[in-house]
Amino acid sequence: MQSSEIRQKFFEFFEARGHRVVPSSSLIPDDPSVLLTTAGMQQFKPYYTGDADSMTSVHPMLGKPLGSKNAVSIQKSFRTSDIDEVGDERHLTFFEMMGNFSFGGYFKEGAIKLAHEFLTSKEWMDLEISYVTIFQGKEDIGVPKDEESKEDIGVPKDEESKRIWQSLGIADIREEGMEDVFWGPTGSSGPCGPTTEIYCKNGAGQDIEVWNIVFNEFFFNGSREELLAGNSGKKLERLKTPGVDTGMGLERLVMVVQKTTTIFETDLFAPIHSFMRGNASRQEEMRIIADHVRAVTFLLADGVRPSNKERGYILRRLIRRAIIQWQQLGFSRHGLSNLIKGMMDQYGVFYEETKHNQGTVDHEFYVEAEKFDRTLKTGAKEFFDRFPDMKIKEGAFGFHQIKRISGDDAFYFHQSYGLTLDVIKDFAKKGGHIVEVDEKEFESALERHREISRAGSQSKFGGHGLYMKTGEVTIRDESEVEKVTRLHTATHLMHAALRAVLGPEVRQDGSDITVERTRFDFRFGRKVTPDELKKVEDWVNEAVEKDLTVKWEEMSYEEAIARGALGFFHEKYPVRVKVYTMFDPDTNEVYSKELCGGPHVAHTNEVGRFRIVKEESSSAGVRRIRGVVE
Ligand code: SER
Image (cartoon, rainbow, N blue to C red; front, side, top):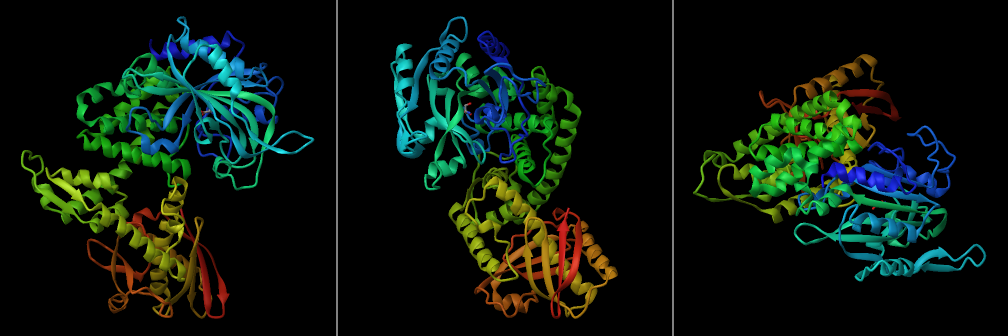
């Protein structure tokens, strides 16, 4: 059965059983507490909380009320939490989620029977259910018993679902806990409740979770993390309109119906099949490309644009990773654009936005890819300059020599060009060598960098502190890190510019950088004139346009001072310090040299346009400037 028929049957089945067909909402959600739409239920949240009524409130996309307590949709969804799993048989970032919903209509019995019939009936999917899961219960979770007694009871084991499954002849019923079979909330608060999940076999006989049926009984006024941690003191409240929210990944259902081993072999990925067959030994890379190309197509078509912020940053990462993987297979970028076109053609049948925005999607991808090309080229050039023998054997095979790349060197390329360890290894492999990267040393370089930065961030001059919040930065934090990093480099340039324009007696007195702006204090006896400020701004922007190289070295404090690096002489520095130098690679002219925890951009053109927004007095003899980058 083709995927298009599966979609059609899904709608047909539920429509015939009283469900209103609702179109997919955009990947850019209305709910500001989530970056992207992650589930079909998101657009229906107000029906569960009682903020809207499906019978009477106007549905924003239909322009009229649903007029039913039941809905069915196939929702474009995106989950960043699965990014690192992409490459295996069944994880994706972008996927289509099929779901049927009830807002005060049917509950457990209705939902389970509908799912059972759709999956197992000969007329519909004709599948066999391997097993199902139910919620095992949790006593120590705050749920007030009822209005009167207010006594806390937990969420009991879902005996009702168990009985219903048994009555349908399902023998294998497994009990699981909060992590697996308790859904939600999405975002900063929302409906949530126990679930029952259905597993079927794929073509390789593996059991795959295909459908998740959520019984939205509760509302939690906090995030899922808070709910799972269990120490927020917040309680689950009973929902005004308990309901059902189900989710079945179309890709997984198609895999099970078409009896393939992976989701990538289904007809949903047809545009990439010939490439997959031609690169049978590189399946992981092909799957990453397949997932990312499809995700990029949909994100661009829904109006997300590559940037260093939030969803724009997610998109940028997907584009960059797809390009890296694609080029490593030896293909030209043109081929990748064709693949995107193939996706738009295939999906344009169901999603008008991918058909109508073809030109824009194509153009945006091209511009971003060009940008990344330039960064990669500089990174690769420097890499091969540093490791020339890696290149000599390019194309040679049959003779391998083991090469080692130190962790410090790998870290340098990671830090300067955003090259991941995998890419560094792949670069090195190009020479036909077996390459070992000292990953332990890489990790300790990373840790040392953090320590120096931490020491730096405690002193006034230093690092911006964002890296150090947690060892692992989240995607949202990473986008902030990028912004602050650009501002940080702009601050060094501004310091140098002030000395160039006002004289070398200018001395930094402190700085503070947030995601919005840099604030820089310096010793200087009078107000800086508008004309001088303009000169400072121009100086910085010229240095940005010259695309100076930014390099750092670790050395002793004494050596740093001896080499003329600027620092605060009254600060207590660690024994080993980092010195950041910004220089013109053509002339070697040094524009700035400072002791600093970092991090900084690798090339000043990443800073963007610098603008001074305010100059004022901070205290006697100290001026304060605020600047932004655009
Ligand atoms: N919201 C649930 C999920 O995403 C069911 O739709 O799994």
